[in-house]
Amino acid sequence: MNQELLQKYADFAVKIGTNPQKEQTLIIVSPIETAAFARMCATTAYKDCKVKDVVIQYTDEKMNRIRMENGTTQTLSDIKPHKLAERLDYLESEGSACFLHIIAEDPEIFKGLDTAKINAVNKASRTALLPARKYTMNDLVQWSIVALPTPAWAAKVFPNVSEEEAMEKLGQAIFDVCRVTNGNPVAEWKDHLAYLKKCKNYINSLDLDYVHLTNSLGTDLTVGLAEDSQWEGAISHTQEGYEFLANIPTEEVFTAPHKDRVDGIVYGTKPYVYNGNLIKDFWVKFKDGKVIEHGAKEGAELLGQLLDTDEASRSIGELAFVPASSPINKSGILFYETLFDENAACHIAFGD
Image 1 (cartoon, one colour):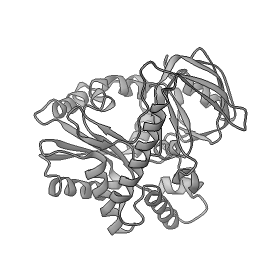
Image 2 (cartoon, rainbow, N blue to C red):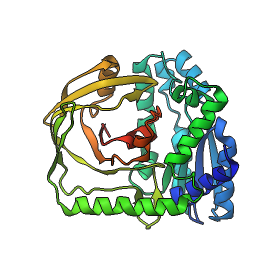
Image 3 (spheres, one colour):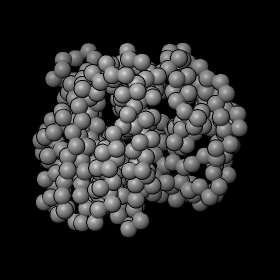
């Protein structure tokens, strides 16, 4: 990848994405494949943001595959207390902490494995780390997510070219949709964020009670909005007023539905990737906020497993509007990564 643009991407991810403060520790969660970029981000945090400390926590998805394939559900679901304690130590220390997550995952890393097992282990991890996750999910600290290509991911997105060309094409696509290509991501994102703010302010001014969605495939869905819900978009704020950009890229404005006021049917216009497998031409029917019927031409069983993950999975926790002008939509690329693919179309999100 172009090293000059990569450095600008790192600078943007740290300074605009996470926006660490002098008194904070920046925790960077990075795959081992993106160690060089993680170190770029760490250098920016120290030199430009003057942070107290930077801690990099490396992940190894190939080892995760080995464990998921060979370990028992009981063993893998036994999340040791030190994992939570470590995060809380940083979050509850003087100055607290903030997070930058780098994703560069093989979309098929768990393909062919027991989906029920994967779901159970993931649920156990989420539950065990919930006290720490509340800091990020409630915007008590800054956090951001950025992506970089890896050979396995690039080969999935661009399967008919060489590994080198696939990496180049995916890297360029990421730079394009993340507004890095022209070399001035900070200025371009300021304009984009101003546009999203204008959109959310306009929708909030309508004081909507519900939204009625239709499309050419037959979608006829009424989504009642939660009492006192607000439309949000892009920039978030901590209680101290620190701004951060949680998702890079982002094209959406979103709000919270009422849990009991979703009725009708929705048809997906784009495929959904679940544990490396595609769910295509799917539909979901709601009554009183819950999914009562569903189906798909491809991946119907997977869709059922997703909707049965837990007691909340048959309700929706988010309604989001995305403009047709979204660079991700215009690219025509299926990224096999929700961070990107959700920003290609208006969407609903199941569960939390």
